[in-house]
Amino acid sequence: MRNGISRFEFPLKRQISIGREKDNDICLADRDISKRHARIKPVSAGILIEDVSTNGVFVKGKRIRKQVELKKGDVFQMGGWEIHVLVDKKEDLPKTVIREAELTIKKLEKGLFPDLPKHLIAEDPKMLKVFSLVKAVAPSDATVLIQGETGVGKDEIARLLHFWSDRAMKPFIAINCATSTEQVLENALFGHERGAFTGATDSKAGCFEEAHGGTLFLDEIGEMPLSIQGSLLRVLEYGAIRRLGSGKKENRIDVRVVCGTNRNLKRAIREKLFREDLYYRLNLVPINIPALRERPHDIPKLVESFIQRQMKAPQKTFSPEAMGELMDYPWPGNIRQLLNAVLRLLLDPKVKDPIGTDDLNILKSFDSQESVDFGAPSTFDEAKRLCIISHLRAFPKDSIPKLAERIGVSRPCLTKMIRDYGIDVQRERSGNSEEF
Image (cartoon, rainbow, N blue to C red; front, side, top):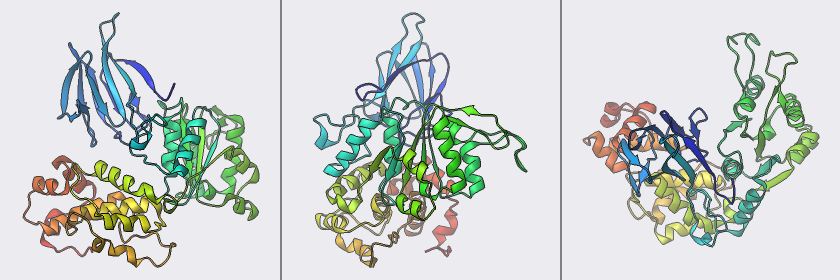
């Protein structure tokens, strides 16, 4: 990546896939790119692109329907990326040239971060300093320790480090060290050979090998068991891993390691819960993310951006008084809590436009900053599921297409969510469910 612009040419001699997952032919590290976003194949006049995403493929600002044929000189966009169609002079074959679209925060149009992904919003000086530090260290392979409270977006900063690095076209793998047992985490990180343990019928690569050439983000590193901390230190020092059951056989890896934590690791060291030598190895570049309550003036822009990304068209807005309350609230769960709350208000059919202070009474249920339960779902998936259920009950006679229009999503998207979330449409329409 040079001057903040990532650019490469990809000769198109067969059908290829583009998406966020590493097994695509072209892997784009962008939150706005679907796991499987598009399929492209060469045709006589240029290329045929098929949209298989939820976020869309756009030509001249309009989303394509299923597929479209493009010719030399045409440009289409997905997420924060533009794809230019060229023709190879020697072989007369279609070729794609991919580069980052110049996405700009309105207040930063002078060029501070012209390539900042559009969902990352910051005008507060504290966050601008964070972005400046990320920009400075991204080209290096130094390990980075991202510290901040729960919900501030440590994973997004890790992805930004990858996005702005020379490894951007390689895999970005993230694993939460707090969600697995010691044995499961060790296996997930280092992989295993066939017969390494009961049930190991095949060899399997771990996260380090899957991230080869790219970036591995170890979230909640402070929760990693001491026994695995020693293995991690060895990987960082020697650049090689040993799969479980491999004996002394080592596999060389080329991985940039980024870690995140909301714990005080120095205290963990004093309590003998974290290795001091590992801490200094990980803390080569510390990045501290401020809590949302320390930058309240970013909240209106965060809410506006979130509404634009979640809804087809802004169906609801916040009154100035309601936005003022959002800015005054301390948000112990930070950005994650804010967005969960906004999503619930957007999708609740009982909340009308504009959203007023009376709709924010749920905020008053907080007596301390210890709570992170907003009275709202803990995940976006849960919020969407509850939204669908509430609409089915509020409008039991609506067809699926009409319901999709009310919610602000496409009919196929709503159908897929109903299937994925296991919603019984007839039962919810009849109001016989015990949920709520």
